[in-house]
Amino acid sequence: AIAAATAELSLPIIHLSTDYVFDGDKSGPYIESDPVGPVSVYGRSKLEGEHAVAAANENHAILRTAWVYSTCGHNFLKTMLRLAQTREELSVVSDQLGCPTSANDIAEAIVKIAARLLSDSSPDLRGVFHLAGSGETNWAEFARYIFSILEEKTGRRVTVKDIATADYPTAAKRPANSRLCCDKLKRLYGVSMPEWQGSTQAAVTKLLEEPKETT
Image (tube, rainbow, N blue to C red):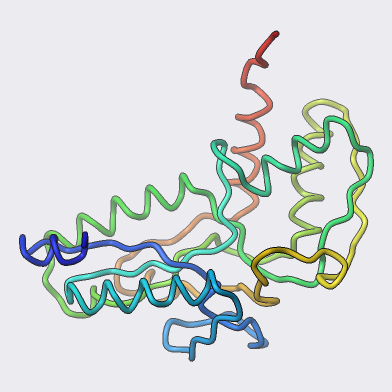
């Protein structure tokens, strides 16, 4: 409905999608033209969303992102910090690869992309693009990095035990490889995402500095 409404107004639309549209079997980072093959209902619904947006408004930029975290809402980073309050050791999956991505970085990128879409009618700026943090890691190493910042700031130490995906079933099956190549976005829009470590440090630091609610 939104895509159709923007088309009627001759406006571009930016639509967020996900790494879940891929099956995760590729050995390297995914590019936009790689075959899709979602392995979960969630992934299939997101792929259907991509198709619906593209069909309703050809003036679109579909942005696939992955491993999104923020200082708000529910996400992996906040869950790790919450569990760290009462746990000294956590078991975290280590056989899934991806690019941790800050919601703040996504928002800043979208502002730049929107400005270009409104001012430049080039067909090259329309289509599917990957938008994820620079670099790669696995969930266990991501957790270790979060806890290294926690220890540096507070002195609290939490150790991470590597486990396999099979040992931690989830409602929606995650791709084993969620790495997204963002070269197309950089080449056509001039938008580069920051390294995930710096953005993670900023988020953890902000959360640790927030005043705690008292009861």
